[in-house]
Every structure is written in structure tokens, then in C-alpha cells.
Length: 84
Image 1 (cartoon, rainbow, N blue to C red):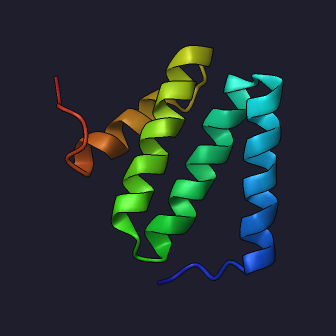
Image 2: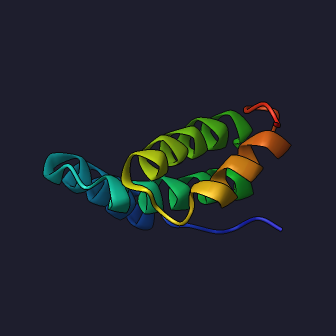
């Protein structure tokens, strides 16, 4: 099942990501990049999804975000992170 996201919604998300970068809000960036990764994955854009999920994971680590474990598991499943 593909997730349908309008171009307007994508642009809004892009603006939110830029604002969070400007504010240095790693916690919010983890959430926003995770959402962007979900959108790209549902659109079948697996490389973009993997890149965005990696960014989300980095910001989750930086901010001790609760998404950290979930993101790491997804990266392992996708073959982008080694399992322990």
C-alpha cells in the first residue's frame, strides 16, 4: 500500500526540517526525518528512505530520543546497520 502525500505536504515537511536545523532542535529533527523516511519508503524510494532514516537515527542518538531503538531496528532490517 502506497502512502499518498501531496507535494504541498512534502514542501511543508521540508520547511519544518529546515526550521529545526536553524533552531538546532535534534529531538524534532529525529521525528521529522523519521516521518520523511516513512513517506519515501511508502513511495517505493528505498534509497531515499534509508538515507532519511539514517539521519533520523543520528539525531535520535544526539538527543536521546525514544525513537532511537525503533530507528536502529529498521536500519538493521534494511541492511543499513549491523546487528549486535
